[in-house]
Image (tube, rainbow, N blue to C red):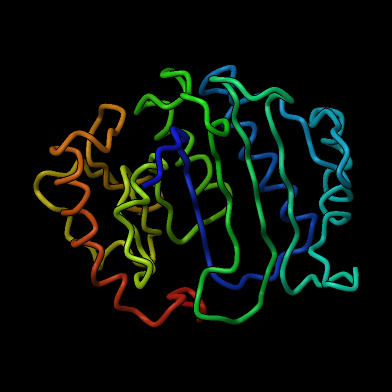
Length: 245
């Protein structure tokens, strides 16, 4: 059983070769949106070659900082086919207001999974401040993530729900699930779920407008309905966005 109290938003997409300059533009768009949500979603510290550096000081040179964080092979050689990593924290401390934004983007390796991702997570083994995981805040953070990075799929969830995950599936039960505009028409929202379309046509399904709790049977029941509704998306060749439209 997993008892960790963290909450996460995990966005993902398939092969998409993007240079550091493009990733930097996306990153700045995302952080500019995040800071409008709550003070905790700001004041980022960038991990630059293993050393902390204020993110605000990197705005003009962010592309170079991302280029320096290219994924490297076992011998230390750059392997841009696996993308670039760009991670920030809002504090060097681990407390209820802690948040991290971790991105691996620009990968174009072909495989049976999403090779690019962007994640927001609360502090390790710390019960998060209710304000930063309240539905309006967490939903806004999810939309900032998926729209800035043009993600294909995204799920928001408490870490504890991982006990209900089926490792044989690509999609997992969660609090909120987002499907990109290209695939949204495949999904019929279940009656009990909260559903909305984004301005660009993406579909967001939510199990509850309260903060999701694994020990709430009603929350879990709607989350299961959402996972079942995603079956047509799950049934596509994976990753479904490997081929352009």
